[in-house]
Length: 208
Image (cartoon, rainbow, N blue to C red; front, side, top):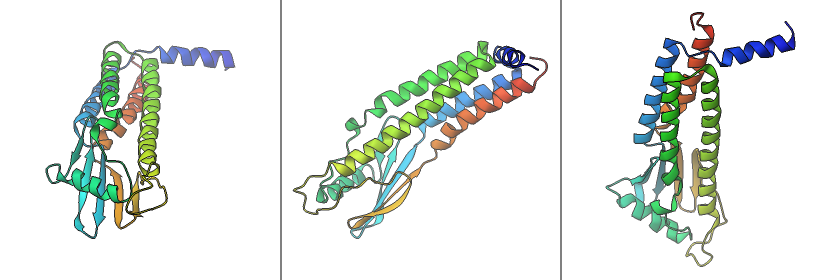
């Protein structure tokens, strides 16, 4: 088979309508995004000598939820004050303004693909979602970097600038910080896998 024939074959494949099984998988992908919107995506936990049980902060796509009916955020900011870190405030997380909107767009695009889409439309959707994921993680890392490097030089406790760990544990001054993906990351990670499965099903189905 010549290169021209191979390219023509792949173009025809991308234009192939989705099979019934593939459409079901895309619907499941939509459900996974809806779950990601309402479940916590990340969990930050702090332990210090005066807080043996720990302080917890859960990050959703649209809000921050602190443990102990929100009191933990006040305590975390008190700890941060000693090392000169600025207070953690939900208003500073501009990602919470556009991430839910972006996920809503992906839901609409997935539903459109389910109704009138082709394999090519899933390829485009997958590429956009992977870019969105990489950009979101990069934005999250930059947020952590900014908090750890913009320290007040007049703070009671002077420490070297640092970047709070995004995944794992680390010791910062007299407390230990841990940060891990929460349950909401599972359906978010499932979305691209379901898109890939839908493409594979449509490619293999001789009736589409």
